[in-house]
Length: 217
Image 1 (cartoon, one colour):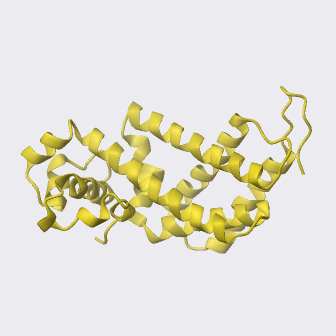
Image 2 (image 1 turned 90 degrees about the horizontal axis):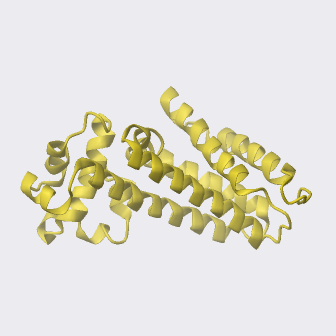
């Protein structure tokens, strides 16, 4: 199995060679590979240490549980994903809609190119217990904040409320999950356009009733 997105994190990538002795980095990648291979429920610490080529004792010296290792690996993968989206936004210019499309496209391309992380990101995180669910919710809030920051940079006036932006981030997640369960992310042009259409409808049409503001244009 090819290396996952987690392995590209700048704090991990230089340390994945077994000769370096950087066992924590290898275990984070090993856990990602184990979960991609078997799913979170079926993956075991033994699977992770097999992929990482370290001992079970080493695992427990570094992580208290399978869950702790999995969640740390997830956080590293999210940071790489965000860096790729940021690069796409920087290349898209100042127009908010161009940035929106570029960010969505980069997100989709990353998930299609990184099936091990895509499974972790979209599907397995929901099976890993309450701490994972809380982390997932917090991550979606981060992506909602990214939408807000992008709109602010574009000079938007009134913007949707926090919960409306959370709905947008979660809706993107749900559609991609459905596509992955159905077989994968094949037609990125069509999917990008669908997500862009939904996002624009919300971003340009939301009225913040609590503040009494009008939709921004």
